[in-house]
Length: 155
Length: 155
Length: 155
Length: 155
Image (tube, rainbow over all chains, first blue to last red; front, side, top):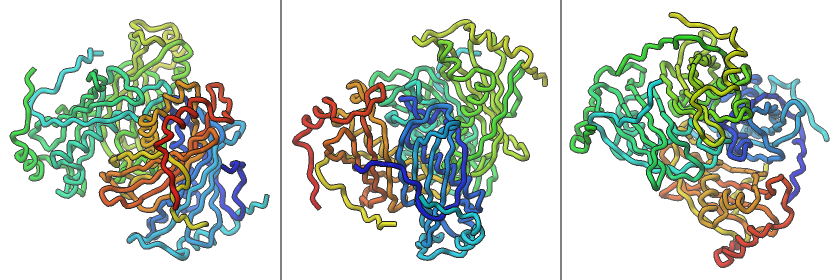
């Protein structure tokens, strides 16, 4: 197995940060957050990102599309506990294809220790389930609307 | 607070039993099932009951109705742990009104120790949200279809 | 079935309010919050209450006790949807017995429409599981520490 | 993005199959299973595998170890709906290192259409959190105990 040194995704991206507090019912019998709940934290961050940049699930639906998730992954570095306040950094990578490709970092406040990193990929279909092969106009508009806010990452 | 001696509901009822195994992720940091998950066990039992007696969520929807839950309650007697096999007994009480009134018992196998009891009440509305004040035909048919299977409880 | 007119609990109480935003994954196929998730909202409010008044799960554990839930109930008046911002009002009722008796109201912001009301009751045991019959010192201290903050409800 | 053609993992493995029925509360507002719940299905399959082969969370704990998850991934091919009966195939890959490396396939019955594939990786630590660098005796015993049951996959 390759070492899982964390490298930030390369290229242009839009970024947002969201705070989440670990719920009692998210902690398992080992007194750490059960791994599956990180996907809830990612979902929360994605919802918050979508509301900030008008790329919410409802925005996409009103444009006539659905964005099903086709891939998730998460690597765990250190556990989170009950009451921890977490900072989720979510970055949407710039893609020429009609995909929504998000990267995530989960850090514990106040010291910002890195606990986990993750990724989700969504494709776009219309309401009949037809796969989009090029970026529909709502997505092109989204890209140009935020043209000056994309950041660039060179390591 | 009144003592919560458990008394079985009185009157005619239809009964079903469903087995559930406690999932790892349902157990909290005290190593017992988090109380909210009992509502999942009730839901599982209700789904299984519905499939047995043709009173599933989909049966109700196809008849043109929705059955939103308006009341839940649960009393906890002893905790359940990871790996426990639970037997959920669900009983639909005979009601003249257009309500679905279910009672639940949660017992641990193999000794059938009583762990919890509960109740859920659903009302019926049409798809526009109008409350049904009398039993719609699908519900009358359900009652008569199982006429000979209702049991009666006299303590 | 009795009418479920909502009456605020009577007597002295401590109050706290907590905001919760409905998560995408809490909404079911009817596009409303699945009823079981209200117990998560109650738990969130109880945790926040405990942190404000030093009656958290960890405070109780450090004092040598556990506070298992023995009763939950919830009545649903109107549904919540994805993205709704909810205000949870939690009130701890003044009790002479060693019980934690909480009442809840769930309201949708900004208009504060009442969506649901609920109650949870916890008993106290020591770490060996022995039931407390009188209020242990940590609970008496909690009561006296907040003596001037108890509110009184006369309808 | 690389094409995500599904290729079965290569090498020796132990296999188990587990059936799961989709719960009402696992389906989101798009009427498909919310992606995060697949990690529950994987957990269910892993628990069932562990009970069959004596590699359960409790077996590991009694041996003096913990097996935290350090990686999860899942690729989604087709959605699952309420009431679907799913077959989860779980395979533990033979590894010389002290890791538990599981692969998963989720298929819908009765036609066994492939809906998703996934992977989880666990490391081993002792109860003080020290990482195991070689396989502890309980794991070597597990390997030799099932020596004749390992299957081999050559594509």
